[in-house]
Image (cartoon, rainbow, N blue to C red):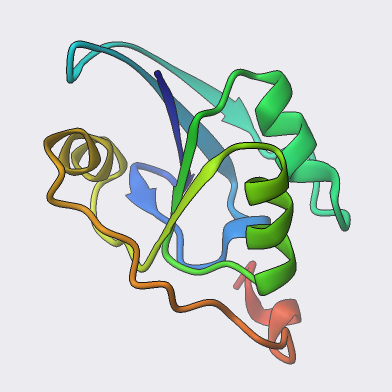
Length: 118
């Protein structure tokens, strides 16, 4: 299983599409066995769900995400967990333990999208 966490530095980002990195955690038998870091290749409508699927994503974890992105991830067979915060690896470990659940809360509009990089 490959879990991706949208992150800024080591922390889960609150703005999925504008994160600096995607931290990938490979897990076997509920334990992280490897990790990689991918720079965000850019936020364009519909691109990131396909990009992360091509990188082997089974799960994406973020603080926040738009409804359109959630739908695209679901269409690509990738489970979406939103409402996460804190350290990225800890979020992935919490997911593996079953203690990280999605809040189901998604952004309905991006009126502040230009502030995400600040």
